Length: 126
Length: 160
Image 1 (tube, one colour):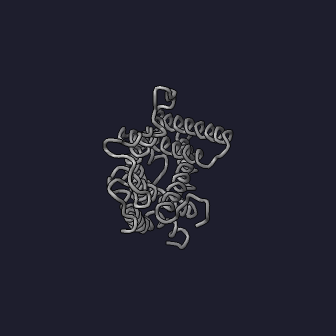
Image 2 (cartoon, rainbow over the protein chains, first blue to last red):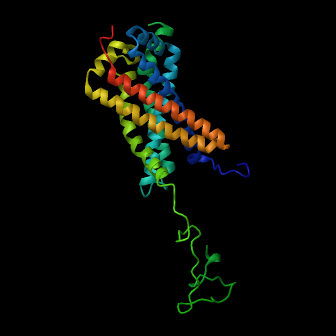
Image 3 (tube, each protein chain N blue to C red):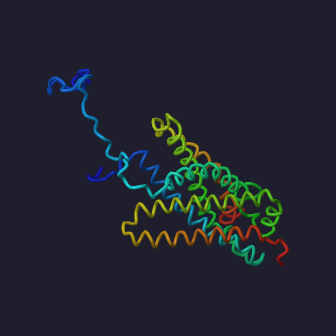
């Protein structure tokens, strides 16, 4: 660990870093997402045209990344709440982080087909 | 462990006997941040505590709202392929989904804006930088919340 830093590494710090990074990414997407949805007030054609980009293979990969960020932020957020409000939370913060990571991995495997399936069919043929 | 054992009075063997006892107690030292009659009135209120609590309360609600939203939009019934104007019109025909989306919009924007406010406070070192970044953040947040709310309330399935 470099001298003169408050950053302690390990599960506690890295989960905090990941929570920040995913939070900022989700917020920027949310801003764009409200703007694209607002096109329903312009015309059905303009809305459908922009939504079509959400269905391309490259954006499907970005959507998978968005799901990854949201699921981590949601699960780790529940862990943060447990650390703050459950009397034994701080003691079990590491175990809870690995539980979060475990659930996250399972959900991400489950999301592969629904989120990326249509992109795979388009790229590799159906 | 045993090498740092101290006597009952809290004085180690090096210091010798305690100067103080039950009859001659040590002087009470006031806590450094103790508020007294002379200290100025707080002008800050409890905003930071309210913001901290809001992050946790909105977070729990958002877990349900956002994961439900992801399931509907990206997983169930063909995933993203089914989304289009007709799909949006079908869902916003129901007040339930209008309220769902409205609540999700407000909570997510406020939760995210407060998160970014914290990030700006942490990393922008100059007061002027913080001022401008937060001004931009609050402008974008108010604009987005108002735009989204307007779209949900004025949605017209027969726009054309």
